[in-house]
Length: 202
Image (cartoon, rainbow, N blue to C red; front, top):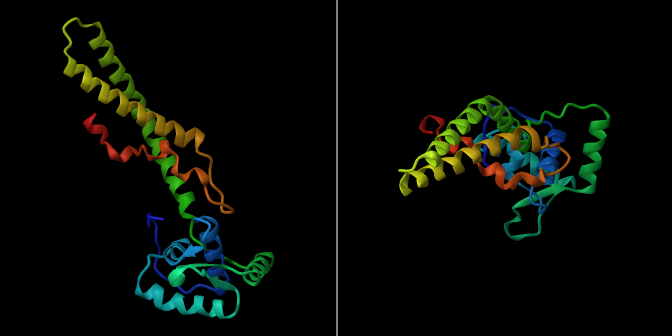
């Protein structure tokens, strides 16, 4: 996960919280297990020396206790819960223990996109209307040259993509949950980021 928005200052976490972070990072990952940087992000921390010095030994103890296992892949880059770890985490949840995880990165991505689309949709629709009106004027003119149409084509594609992105975020991108990977995370419409083109330049 690339986003580090909303990261908090490091505080010690319980073993079951670390187990929960490993578990959620694994379920939201590639299926090979959780990588260290994602475990840290699910806890809401920025990777750094203090986090590593504090959490790596704690993770190693959980491995030695049989609650976490390392991948057999080269360099042991991945970790995941064992059956013992899953039972321990399930027991903690049944007992109502506080698992102080941060908002899942995939949920934060959805929420921030949804909030931004809500803020921008009115301006985007207005811009689209203006772009369509400009194209209509070109269509009605008998003296319009090819370059004017080429520029209009660029504006039409750009503004249509922005409106599509906002509509997708508001009405078609389902809110992800913590139990599984958001499979549509790489949907092409999601890549049409409003931030890539400044509305002021439209």
